[in-house]
Length: 155
Image (cartoon, rainbow, N blue to C red):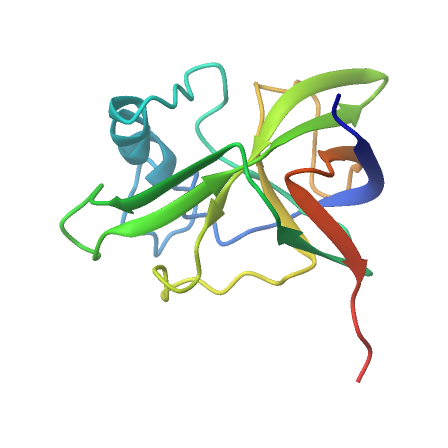
């Protein structure tokens, strides 16, 4: 049986690379659509999810992957960057009284040096959610066997 940890979060702007909306993105259609066939070839079908990520600030919490549902190593999804490692953990996102089955999307920073992500922000792959917006408050339920939350240390 899975134990779930629920945290309040806010939808925030990301780099715009996963979706391709950033003017300086090298992937005009987004990185997620380019990665999806490579993930599918390794057994992870992302077709139920919208081909972009929702960036959820969970501040003051930070997350640590413990035992993600999927970890794909050395994915050579495009010639512009070296192969990367990706992990995905199950989660549920609640917005406007509806709950969606989702996955966290985690490009391992040791293999993805071009985009720094704040450790208080989780990228989520979700089905299309009508009406969601930057600044929206959401509840994110994380499988505690896959992801651990801690309070961000203060300096």
